[in-house]
Length: 163
Image 1 (cartoon, rainbow, N blue to C red):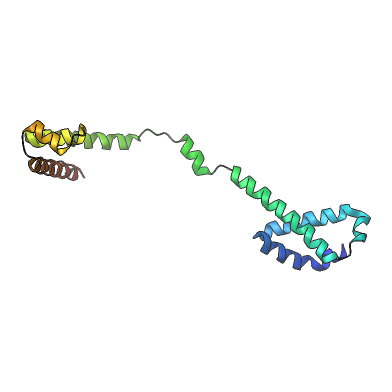
Image 2 (cartoon, rainbow, N blue to C red):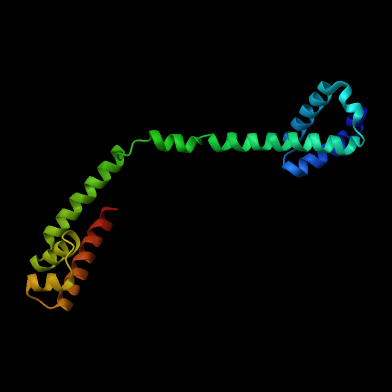
């Protein structure tokens, strides 16, 4: 026990470096003290007290570090809990905003000439290629590209006006 008391500071520094935490090192030192106290006469047979203390304290520190890592790995963060219980439905404010945007978009589509509107709906809603839209509208693919630019700009401008 006397060797423990003399080497306490050195042991704490060694363990702190080894496990990366002064608190964990001090906890390991307390466990080491308890283990030494429980050994009774068995420690009289130890030839190198310093090496013996380092071994015991190091093993205890590593066990504590492993236990702490397992504990941290099993913990669920507050953010994870909030994600699990969070409602995926949009908030009333988001719902109202999206409804307003949809209303403006429908009005903007109604303001478009028939061919640009059809080109946009066929391309974006139906997923048709420019060639398919061109065949459907009986225009060239370059005209489809112009219709799409015209329609998208018009919708974008109306949505920007909404704010």
